[in-house]
Length: 152
Image 1 (cartoon, rainbow, N blue to C red):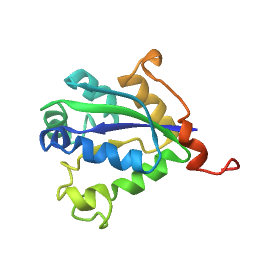
Image 2 (cartoon, one colour):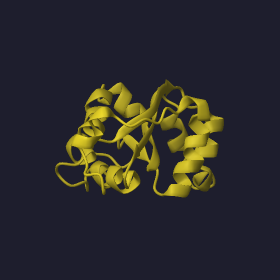
Image 3 (cartoon, rainbow, N blue to C red):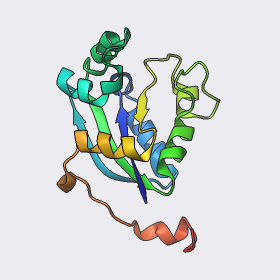
Image 4 (cartoon, rainbow, N blue to C red):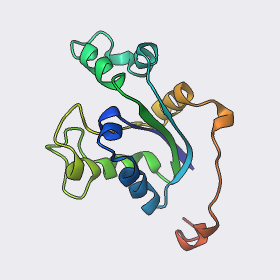
């Protein structure tokens, strides 16, 4: 099973879209194995977006992500990183395909509702920034046998 960090960003929280987006992941049979609401600090932002700290857009990014609470989640499932990123659509909501989360709910590059890890290494690093090991509750839903064949 693969894991991904998901952040429901401040615009998602402020627009009260959290439940709709969580439902999309649940509808896709992706396991939510950790979830919490928190206020991202400038220090955490610098760790999470370390590759962007020296870029000209970083101050606006930090101001945005620290401007209101976020909901952090760890999702688990087969190919979950790819699946979630496809569900989200293009980073810029104006370019996101119809039917994707951003295609339906976003029209901005920065205010694009959700962050998702872009690879396994990034997921491991990001998850460790937001969650302690004991906060992650991996499990197999009882209805799993009705969602995927045994050989998948």
